[in-house]
Image (cartoon, rainbow, N blue to C red; front, side, top):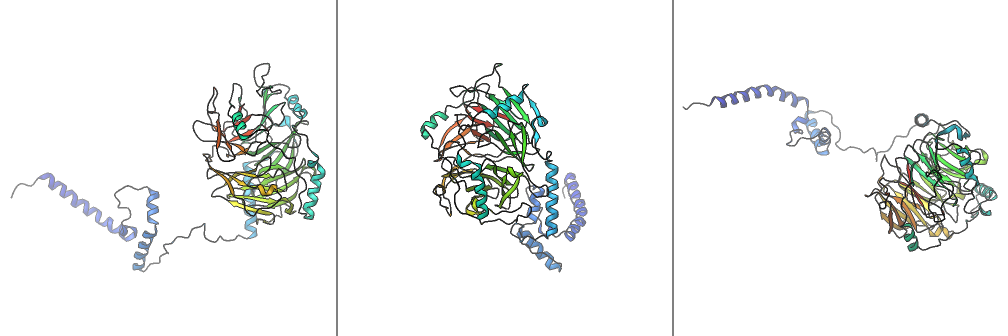
Amino acid sequence: MGDVNPYLMFIAHNQEEKAAVLEPIKKCIVSEDVLAELDVNNVKTKKTRKQQDKAKSSPYMMRERNKVLRSRGESFHPFRRISPRISKPVRKSLEEESLADQTAAVIADEKYPRKAAGPIELADCVQSVDKVGWECHLRAVASYPPPVAASEDRSEVRCRRWVEAVEEGKGRALWTYPKKTPSEGLDRFKERVSKLSMWCGCMARVLTERISSIAIHPSRDILLIAAGGKKGSLGLWMVNPVLGTDGGVGRAADDSPTGIYRFEPHSGPISCTTFCAFGADRLITTSYDGTIRALDFEKLVFQELLSAPKDMRANWMQWHCQLSPNVLLASQGTGSVHVIDDRSGGRTEAILQCYDRSCRTISLHPLHPVYMATSSSLGLVSLWDLRKFGRKSPKVADKAVDTSALICQMSVQKAVSSAFFSPVTGSGLLCTSADERIRIYDTSKLAEGAAPSVCRVETDIRHLHKNSMWLSHFRATWHPQRDDAFVIGSLANPRRVEVYGRPGRMLCALGKDGHFPINTVCPVNAFHPNRMLLACADSGGRVHILL
């Protein structure tokens, strides 16, 4: 018999000792853990803890587990898991719902503590100003005439007639706005807008936080840009009191913009900022802190138009739209739309529960303002008839959706960020949704006074505007004087702002070329109502002017 290799004998001895040590451990595992019999973890590739848990909870593994438990005579559970989404929710009692609402209201109040109720002097909420005598500069804004004088159809008498008609339930249009027509075709507009670019001095850091809304003063004699921030700040950038005759931005004596003024009228994000559509002597802001305020340039005071009850769940304000000089429509986080008359101290004249969740935007038809369009985070776009609004108090409003004033409703796959009527004839409804699509619905029947049962999709555009926690919502907005062109920011490289035509064809991409290109994403954009000028805002608080 030949000599045995001592190394092989040593390996065999170690294997025997290892088997003797592991044998009782294996028996213990098999007796205590049923999954050891199924050999779940003995796989060739290493799995993460999440993958192992998923494998253990798979229907096949649960069936095998139940077989082992059944053979032992132990109790077992069915392998099918019930989805919480399709399971019937347990209805809470009124006391539990009231307690949940109060708890949510306390959390919201701690997150966005409100300013003092009532008017706030401009001097009491100043953050920073560039020049001495800023009061005189802002007070002079009220002296600039509006581009179009308010007509009789927009008088307070018409507003009172609308309120009376709501009470009586009359089904008739109360007034129509004067119809506007673009002075040039789409090809000529494309030629002009393609020449817009940013020049030296046309970019400034208006806020120190992310900009969530923007508005441009409509006067041709002054260039005033208002930007609302994520933390409740309001920035006013007065580029120059006088614009050049060729549309360029004039320069001050010290070769610098005339001033940037920052104020803090709110404690939450300012989701909507607009100049008054009936004179432009006021600046209206809507905030997540549950208040709507109006900056009076003549009195230099932030007037409080609405303050939602603090004990109401999801009491933040989302959007606003003017119906008359004193009547305002405002959407709330509860999914309701309020009709507010500022002459009655911010009292709600009428209310409609449109959705179960937040109502993102509201828009009025330009020819027949009794028709309203809304968008929701539930992926719904709805058309409503204001004449069928019910008069209810916000505290006693039903949580159920009221469909008595609903004309038609369209649904998409994901949340809808905005829905705006075309500003001239209202024949198109421009919608931006989180599924990275821009849709235009045909609403030409509303201009004829008819209520359609459904609106067909006229244009469907695939666009790169995925929402992010670091960016404001992308919202496609019409040109204020055209029904066939709109602007929206983009995530494409190089960074740009894109202008589209109504047929769905991109007219031009602005800001990616020139001596001063836009090197950042600009989700918030707005055209000047009466000049060929575009203002773009980014998440760093900067505003870019393209002219």
